[in-house]
Image (cartoon, rainbow, N blue to C red; front, side, top):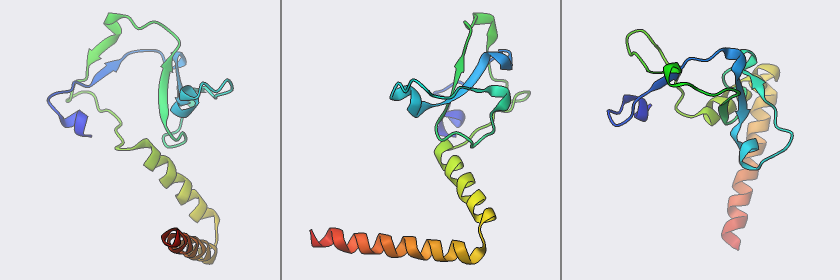
Length: 123
């Protein structure tokens, strides 16, 4: 959001056919994993990939790049795609579990966290 609202940055849009765009988890690109999944942009759901990056399978020509028009165009912005990914995962778990299961799982987690904090202090 900072960069979008900053005068030092310019938001651009690239006009491509959706069939030419794929979403991939950035971690797979960094570690050069040979079996990373390319998700067609048309099949991508926001928050379904932890660290999404868009890959194009075509050259981008100058006439396909425009400055975003604040009046006509509205970008989809998220502060942090990892937070969105984790928030959606947690929401799905909460929806699938009985409230008492969620409560006891969180209690176990906080007990575990507290025990490890005390163990770290003893070292």
